Length: 302
Length: 163
Image 1: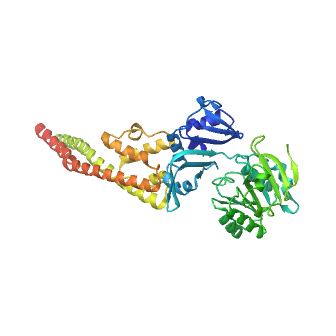
Image 2: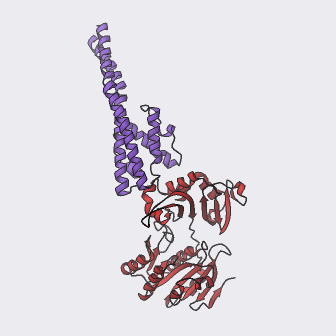
Image 3: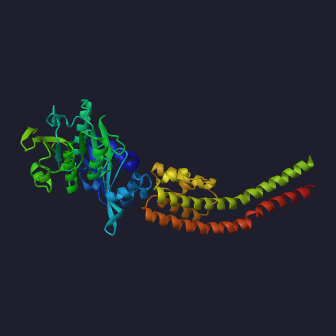
């Protein structure tokens, strides 16, 4: 839990000095002011809450960063080497702690990460009904459409897909949903976040393995996954399509143009039937538009 | 009645002597337990990657003093405070300042390193504890039984004078 990890002082500031519900991210860098992203907007963190001037900001120290990682590892940094190699730890509340420092490599293999210099704590929020406006475009009498959620980082892609899965459950649409949760962000480390009653979660698996194993083992109707990117991810999505499994996925892109310019997207173009574009315009999770397979606009919110 | 009273005097003096000797026995016990603890840490970290609190919880500690030290250390961790001598060695009277320093430094580094460096740190601390244990054993040989014997002799002497 964040309260056990951050230390009393920081935790008190973020929970009492401003609305914690709007906090998306905390960034601590050695000897630099702590930055808090609130409703997608960056502020410095001061003793009295959010500040805009650097002089009033709390300066993160190396000790502070090391202590947070020490506590996040349950006082056992040696036990989280696999997580350190990947560069992040997922806390019990589903918060993701990204870590930067010195990467120790041997024979081209990452051995560990040490000499920590920065941490980035992403706080998941369940925004109830945030996918509701787009829902009717993504589900019809034929079932759920293959959908790609597009947004820049921190604009609510994960929150959207989590709520979407939950909405299926609320409506008793009993599709077997398999969540391939590569970083434990969709459902949380121990499925603490609401993903409804028809979802199975395969955590901390890469997409290639997750899709293959998940389809074989769980026979899902829909696979939900976050942040597709590389060649292997594209192959995994296409594999699901060949198996008749619908895919709801997210991808980093600020606009449809940026999406179309991405490497590998041409391979996926015929896979998705719907595109949902999100932005931070009115805070993370703002739906900008829903588009069909040929990118014609089905709905727009401006 | 007189003999009973004399017996009590011998017993009391012997008990005082035993109390003084116990200091040396407790020190040996503490460092032996500490070495066992480092061995458990080494195994559990390398083979099971067990969490530190679980390792401490599962450790069968034979020294009451080490138990107190570990409890103080766990309290510091759980309260999110940095461990100080006062917190960790509260009520511990059998350690010298330098020994307290060695143990505190050992505890302060626990759980903060990767497996390779943590194992090295534990190994180095174990060697240091072994050195201290050797000294404690010598002290125990020299003085351990001395106070007990002196206590009994003193008791007998008083009994003799009173008799």
